[in-house]
Image (cartoon, rainbow, N blue to C red; front, side, top):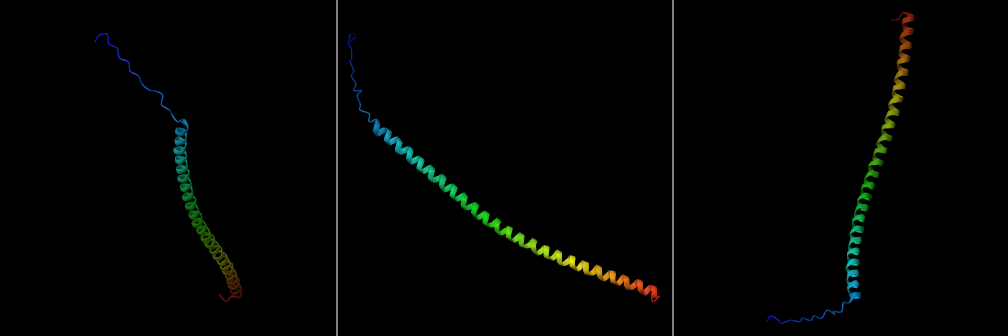
Length: 106
């Protein structure tokens, strides 16, 4: 058995269909890219809708606050007019008191 030699032959001439492999990899890549694109679009659409809702709510809050400010400004104006009227009445009463004191009625 010492001088025995073994010859093993292998058939390494497999035909690799590179076009099919490239096509399969491309299809997998395109599938992943399409799913990623769809997920991103869905996420951005959801965020956009959330922002639209928030913007609408903030717009409503802003309109409400502006209306409240306008009402407060009207109230301030009315109070300022009342203050001026009361000041006029006070000045008139002070003048009447001064006249009464001059005439000796007080």
